[in-house]
Structure formats: structure tokens, C-alpha cells
Length: 262
Image 1 (tube, rainbow, N blue to C red):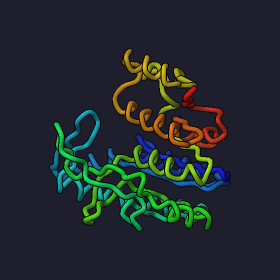
Image 2: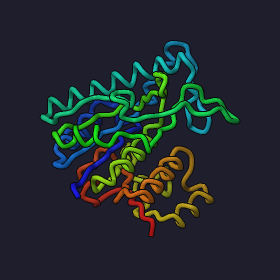
Image 3: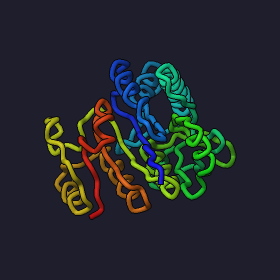
Image 4: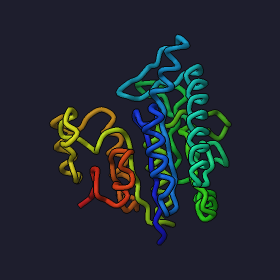
């Protein structure tokens, strides 16, 4: 099986041009099929504030009303095309897409429960068209994915980028040996959030459960790790969490936090 790297980049690396440039230079020379999935929530929140639209979050999850959806669509599209332009300049053939393009990431609007998340999408993983992805990858084209999807009626939906990365990784794991890497500004999952050197090198389900109960792992790291373990249970070979600026070391398994089911 050919190796495939699916890399999700988030955190303040996207907000700081110098950091993003360092990451993209290292990403561009990865000599294997690769997919880049990006976030951009902080930039969307900043623009919302400037426009006088208050960002509403519940447990780190964004409530997406119609006005917020417009802002997110604009911001994520801008980030997407900027990344593609930089990769092209670095000699890495890439194409910017969102989930709505060719219905690459089918989704449905999240059902209203105790909380109405508005125009938020949940990925329909079993409907992901694997051949659309392999067609691009086999032509040595890197898809750069913005976390916007659409439902069967054509309604755009704001969709969690970590979940998209996990879902695409699982869908493609029957065709490729998939390594899923979550990149941000930290060196990995930290035992002490204030100490960059306190990286937990290996997390297994039992350790994860203990750290959650102790509050060592909390907030946005929980859905990231939940997605990661789900991916590994469904065919993804490796999951690594670490610093985007060390992507060259992460892909050789020398840095970051590694997950294991055993």
C-alpha cells in the first residue's frame, strides 16, 4: 500500500504568516501523496468582531447562524486560496477545495438537540467518494481542504476541520496506508499546558481516560483525541499530534505525541 499523509493545520500557525510559510515550505517537499486540511476559526472570530457580530461558542464549538456562515465562508476561502498560491510557488501542485466541490465531503445539517448549532455539518463518512480523492492524488495533486461542506439540498455548512481530517483518513485507509497528523503551535499533547517540554510521547486509551478524568487533557484536545482514536479503530495506521513547524520530524515519527490502541 502506498503511504498517504493527511495533515490538518490549525491554531495560530495559520494566523502568523512567517510560521505558515515555514510550515508550507516543509510540507511542500513531503515526497508522498498528501492532503492538507486547514482551520481558521480565530481569523473568522476576529472578522466577526470587527463587523459587530458576536461569535458564540459552546464548549469550544461554534454556533453558526446565517451571518456567521457568510463570514466563515469568506475567511476560509481566502485562507484556502492563499495556501494554494504559496504551495504552487514552492513547486507543489495543489488544488483548493471545500467539501462542497464534487461533493468530496458529503454532510448533513446537525440535528437540533439541547443546543441548536445552526448551520453546522456532520460528515457522512460512508458517502465520501474515494475515487475523486484518488484521482487527484494519483496525478500528484495535493488537495487543500477548507472546512465547509454542503448538504443534499445545497446548503453550505460549517464543519469541524479535525472531524473532516479523521473522516477522510478513515475513508482512504482502505486504499492507502494513512498517517493522520494534527498540527498546531504546541509540541504535542502537554501534561502541563504552561510547559512546552512536558509532551506526552505516547497516549493509549487507558492513559487518555485517566488524563481526562484528572483534567490534564481537556477542552478542544478532547474532540481531537476522540477523532484520532476513532480513526485508528477504523484503519488509519498512525495518528500524531504536534508542532506544525516540526512537520518534517513528525512525519519521521521523531517528535510529537503518538497514539496507540494497544
